[in-house]
Length: 276
Image: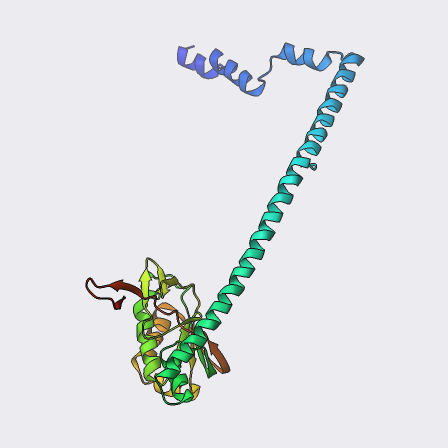
């Protein structure tokens, strides 16, 4: 018999192969596993395991109760914080009320100032509405622009878009306009800072609500012929900007933010001159 045929008929395999197979199939030594299975457990062994389980369980329950239970120190701190918050809210309400009173007085002073330079109160009201110094109300329409679901950066609304729309609304016959309760006046600035559109340095959050006072039918008819209508139609069709018109019977627009004048005295003169 040749060595080759002898190896072919040998079914015992190599020594290393048998050892590896045993190691993989039975990782625990045979003698050790047999001793492990038939080793007797004494009663006190079982009692010790039971006591250890009881102690561990009781300790865990006690720890949970201590961590989640009431703490006198935490209750005192919470009460102090709630009292401070309530005090700050009360002060904030007082400040808001005081600001409202000052705003009403400012509107009254503005009306008196404008009345001195005109012939009739009606002219003063018209002048105050045009300059956005008075609170105005009347019928009109609401144009809502929303770019929250626009995925393309080119479709995000910019200050230029509002310039086109606002100028077209003025040309269509709008008597007063506000964007998100920010009144548009002669000195109003619509700009963009980063990704936010600002009106009078106040950032706006979409959806952008443009409130317009005037004859809603005439404004919409004329607006459809102007550049602003085609501009928002392109934004809607190309970038999926939401555009919605709504006619309302009554709108109230707040006065615009008035510029703060700073005065300087020219050397050699007593008269003060306003510096914008």
